[in-house]
Figure 1 (cartoon, one colour):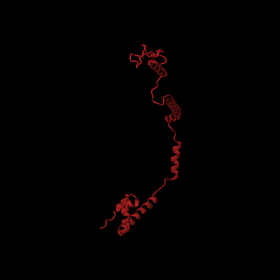
Figure 2 (cartoon, rainbow, N blue to C red):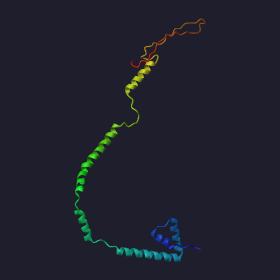
Figure 3 (cartoon, one colour):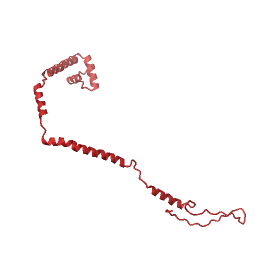
Figure 4 (cartoon, rainbow, N blue to C red):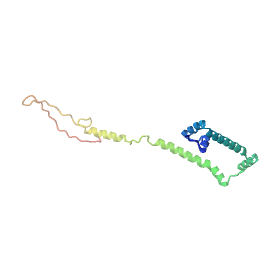
Length: 174
């Protein structure tokens, strides 16, 4: 037994308010069922009748009343408070806008772009000098390289090295 479309489904079908599956069912059912097709035709004619009646009953406001309303709107004088606010609007808005623009300009240009910490160049130079002063044979230590003396031992196959003792100091101020 075939299920018929309900009146609510037909009305929603006319207005395009059905889900796609339900819309397809009503469409195919109207093509195959004569009773539902007659119900659909009566609903369509009722909808058209209601639309034409609503269009015929729609009334427009008379032009004299429209003109009078617009004239009252144009003639309405603002209150003293509204006049002061209207006069002050540029006097307040322009300085605030200028302050915002200046703050944005100077705020963006004075802040460093990267978040890396800043290291003073003098610190790097002092650190380099301290490191160089601790190198045993560096330029600034004042220590002389050990003198190598070739001496033969009793067996004659080994060479002994004499190294002079040197005192090292780490002086960062040099």
